[in-house]
Amino acid sequence: MCLSWFKGRLNGHTYYCHAGGGGGYYSEIRIYPELNRGSVIFFNRSGMKDERFFG
Image (cartoon, rainbow, N blue to C red; front, top):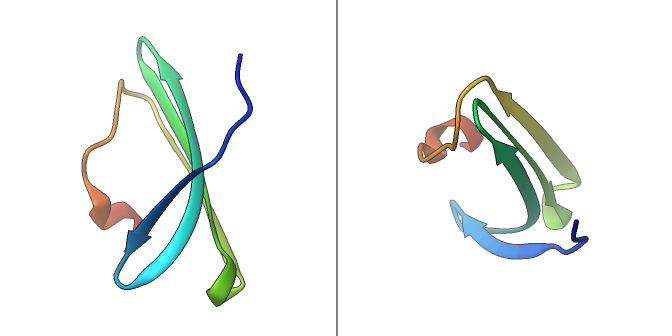
């Protein structure tokens, strides 16, 4: 187990995120401080490579 945040950029906006998953599931939380928004996404599959879900 680990508690950490990762930093990235999407459409010119900085976000902080943490992801997790295993065989058959994946989840990710993102916080966009400059937009005052956040998102959480869950999949019933291993991994996620399509950034359009966060657009």
